[in-house]
Image 1 (cartoon, one colour):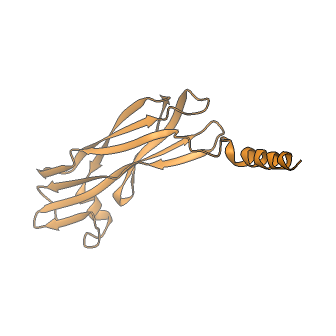
Image 2 (cartoon, rainbow, N blue to C red):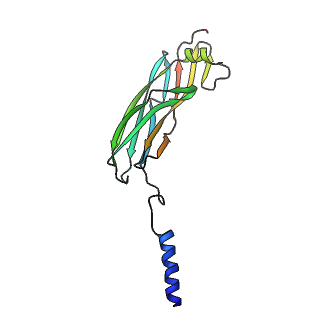
Image 3 (cartoon, rainbow, N blue to C red):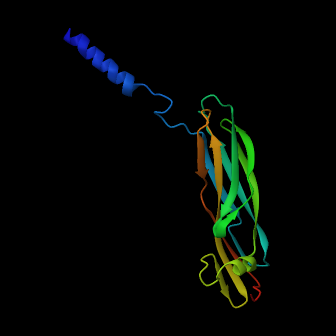
Length: 167
């Protein structure tokens, strides 16, 4: 009788703690989200200019029932920068890339902010030095309609502009 009682206790603990349920382990719906500036540094150039960023997303291989993952994403950055939203569907386990072009205009930023307190923009004689960052903001849902937000790494960049007009 005592062995039977312990069997029920063990069975109870196995049922509660021993079996994985959909919420008891992490499912990597998005395995990886990376961003890089191309190039990371531009010296002695004309401004304004467009800087290129390359995003890479890898969809997880162990999504539950979904074969394709619909995602919505945009480029965000220093000084309140945000691009318009984009979207696509990525097959399970696949890698997708996308390219963003961000306009960097130190003169326009200097008009909107106080150049003495802006940490991204510095000025020396007739040159402008812009040190900024961008990242990808990603939104997706699992099959239970739970919404997830994810941010990529911050891709840092540095630009040295030849001329900086008086403002």
